[in-house]
Length: 212
Image (cartoon, rainbow, N blue to C red; front, side, top):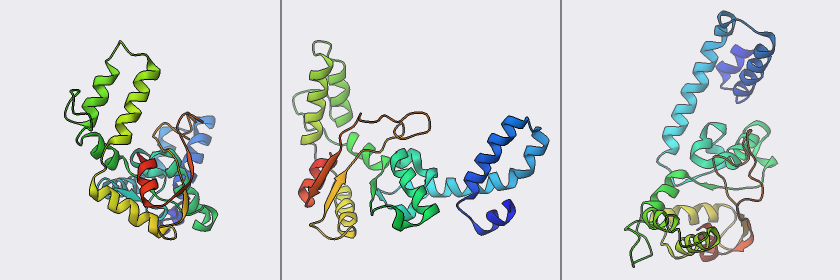
């Protein structure tokens, strides 16, 4: 069954291997016996690397392009949604798209909206605020949030986000804007309630503002 799943490119293969790993841990299976599945594990790894290479150049990813293998690029919440759709069908999960880590890094390394010191990039400006020991955490957080609200998103990012938005049903569809991070909704941590969620966001301008 395992080899058949590997030949078909069955998305369940990753989960079958994880389940077998847990069983082997309990039973104390020898490394020699575990090695019998090395080919299947290698296939999963090769496919994962190829998917990550493709995603590394993307601003936006949809459910048909992702799964658990992209959790570093899109965060665990989006990776989990994509994996559910992959295993159970896209009708199980409402339409969605996710902005990638590449996009986040582009904005962080882009021009800072703060012209009066603090550095040339948004990252520099945030680092400068974090080093300000005269302000408490609440004040520093508010000032960092204000930076994000004033930052200009790269035109390519805005274009890809709005194209994905139109793909959800047009320019006047209400959506939720939610976080998806590497430490969120993972097996080791949930981070529930730690990030903002915006509901009933309507229109292109509102979407880009709430994305920031």
